[in-house]
Figure 1 (cartoon, rainbow, N blue to C red):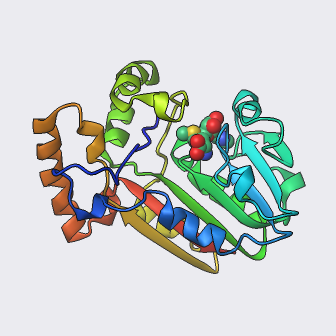
Figure 2 (cartoon, rainbow, N blue to C red):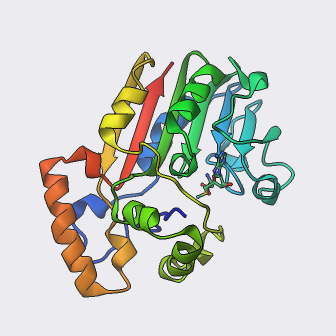
Length: 242
Ligand SMILES: C[S@@+](CC[C@H](N)C(=O)[O-])C[C@H]1O[C@@H](n2cnc3c(N)ncnc32)[C@H](O)[C@@H]1O
């Protein structure tokens, strides 16, 4: 399972300043800066919600969605993708090699069994100079740890009501959190020309069902955030250039 924070920017007096602001903005900024007529985009784990909705794409943008689930791709609607590839991101797809200016991925990399292989594949899908932008959950976040302890079937039953999954109407997918922490990511991105791994500390909304628990969790999270303990971050925003 994975848990997608629904509203780090929500106004709640308990939440510190780093929770303010729009959740997707730092992810979208480097994407829209590069999104112009004629570019080729690959969305990894795009499922039913492509990271760039159809109405925000300039003309002649090629937009390929890759997802493990054919059903999730189909749920995006018939016009969502120029091409839909139902495949595991960990398995190299020769037909995608050297084809893209931009690869994007929102809340997916925690779901792959082998992160290094997946990121290596993504690098080969980019043209030289192309950019990869991804946001995903951290291995050592509270929900990442719970996920490792509980079987998926049990975690799913707990997460669905807590997270009020109606918001984006998505099911809970199995997650492995393989190497989703700062020092492992730094190593994985060594072959890239440039990479920025930005840790985020925004996991408290998962505890909004129990205020005392949320307070206790925030005391912990404020400490790791102020000390910059990047390996314990709840999420990572990665921007990398081939
Ligand atoms: C939390 S959803 C995110 C979907 C979409 N990016 C969004 O913003 O709503 C995770 C997606 O990753 C897909 N997925 C899980 N494991 C995958 C894998 N190994 N390869 C490709 N896609 C995968 C799931 O089918 C699902 O569509």
